[in-house]
Image (tube, rainbow, N blue to C red):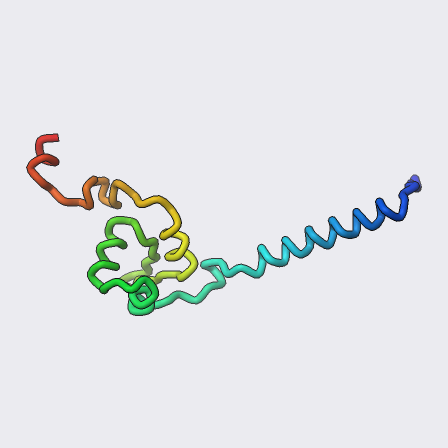
Length: 112
């Protein structure tokens, strides 16, 4: 087995130690943020309170694809981190059914 030796200055050793510590801190922060798998779902009522909107408005946004949600059977699950992240993304112009203009069918849309 070969043995390697390095001639490093004290400054180089300190720089390596600082960089290693920074990488470990960044990794710890990244892993400490909740993910949907580890995060508890919140209720529709809680999302309405968080966004200060009515229940019909939230259901409309969910149907349009503006607010992400998960469905298991008849149950609907929402995660706070996903809801807040969706507010930072640009709004979708086409809803989940592939229709534009919020799914409305107006005479102008019928002609197109």
